[in-house]
Amino acid sequence: MAVLPCANGWYSTGWRRDSRVWDYFDFVEEDNKSICKVTGKECGNRFAGKFPTNLRKHLKKNHVEVFKALERKEEEKQQNEKAIEESTFSMYPIEH
Ligand SMILES: [Zn+2]
View 1 (cartoon, protein in one colour):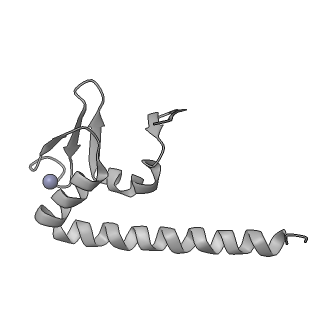
View 2: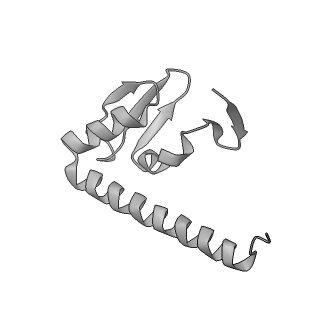
């Protein structure tokens, strides 16, 4: 798995795509744990590693409102990205 350096630590490929989930979790590199911070303090569930799939499951099960908000955000993000792609294509038409 490729690891890219980043100002905020590091990202592995395929992680950034799910980065919205990290609005609700902190990753503690030295413990290799992801900590739920949905409630600001109370929940504090910890998960080994940084697997968005696990984190999403936790949100879905324990913080369903947050999970819905996350899904909405991701949907918006995808639509934005699509819009950007489309506008890029129209700005720079591919010549055949
Ligand atoms: Zn939680």
